[in-house]
Image (cartoon, rainbow, N blue to C red; front, side, top):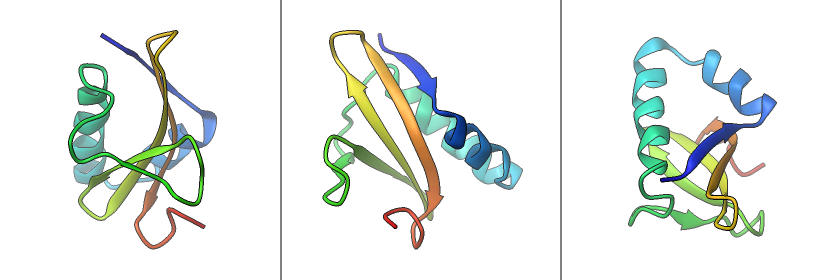
Amino acid sequence: MYSIEFERQAWKDLRRLPPKQMRQIQEKIDSLAENPRPHDSKKVKTIPGYLRIRSGEYRILYQVDDGEKLVIIARIRHRREAYR
């Protein structure tokens, strides 16, 4: 079981979302505690060391620290803004 940690910007991103998307994204994030590398996760080519998962039209960018058993959520962005 991994711990979930949010960077400051990720908290801001999550709080700005409509309630429906917030619930969907929170469920996806909670599932990362059980499996930090689900089958639908992909490496982010523009940001080495980061992974991403999709939740509707939003992308959750995160890092995994296996030594500390920690998932660090870096950003939650709409798909057209996620990789800028």
